[in-house]
Image 1: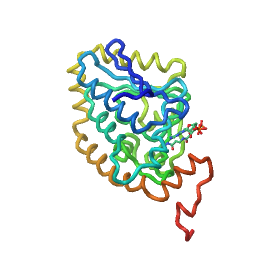
Image 2: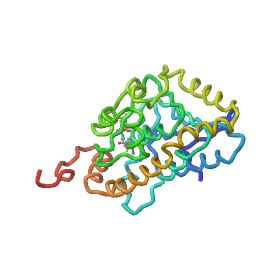
Image 3: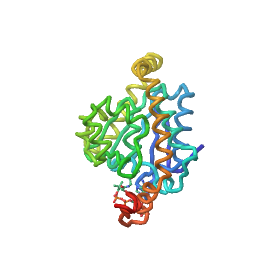
Amino acid sequence: MEDEHILCERRDGVLLIEIRRRDKKNALTNSMYTALASALAHAAEQSAVRAVLIRGQEDLFTAGNDLEDFLQRKATDESQAMRFLRVISAFEKPVVAAVAGHAVGIGTTMLLHCDLVYAADNAKFQLPFVNLALCPEAASSLLLPRAAGHRKAAELLMLGDPFDAAKAMAAGIVNEILPADRLMDHAFAKARALADKPATALAVTKALMRRPIRAEIDEAMREEAIHFADLVASAPAKEIFAAFLEKRPVNPAKVHGEGR
Ligand code: COA
């Protein structure tokens, strides 16, 4: 499955996957998730691909899930995002991410499944799930507290304010911060360095590092998905998505109930 907004190119053993949907801030649609999952599934089969680099552009990673898709979603709909997350979380080859500009929602949580993450000094992360009347996904409710500690993770997941690359590095989400104009070259050089290493040794190393929490990650994703499916179809969430798309304030009565 292909999508015009997911661009794939193989270079020196590295599969470069670029998210490019500039007019909507690279927001991810169902079709884009399907293309991302397919690109990774294909890369898993190809011996010529020895590392993957996920990127946006020098000023933008992704504004997260497309809110129009969220608005249309019913509790029973299958989530294409979940399929992508399952594939990336189980991916055996090394994954590098290059993040600049906005990295909202899944734009941040997918990084918890990458092995190396490089951020531009202009990067702005955000985990606004609660603000959208949603809950965490991508096993971020497990992986972020592990990486950052409960207090820091609570700040990022419960207050949901944007945070800069320095804070992301302190929270264990980012390896290194670079000037925006050096980000892509640097991240590619690291992905290429990984692609040049003995592939089986790398895959075994990655699997061993994940082994102690492999089952917990799957369990967290399953549990989160149950709540997420209900919340995304709830009246408060629908009101918040609609308000964003219609560029109007949220009606508090529809979020908190008429009694407030
Ligand atoms: N889903 C759908 N459309 C989105 C989007 C999203 N997640 N993020 C941005 N867009 C669209 C806007 O509706 C706008 O479309 P229009 O030009 O047709 O009106 C366009 O992209 C530009 O967005 P805009 O909000 O004007 O850009 P900005 O630079 O002022 O702000 C963001 C950038 C990322 C801070 C802001 O767009 C935003 O908060 N987006 C929503 C993020 C979000 O909640 N994601 C879901 C996480 S679970």
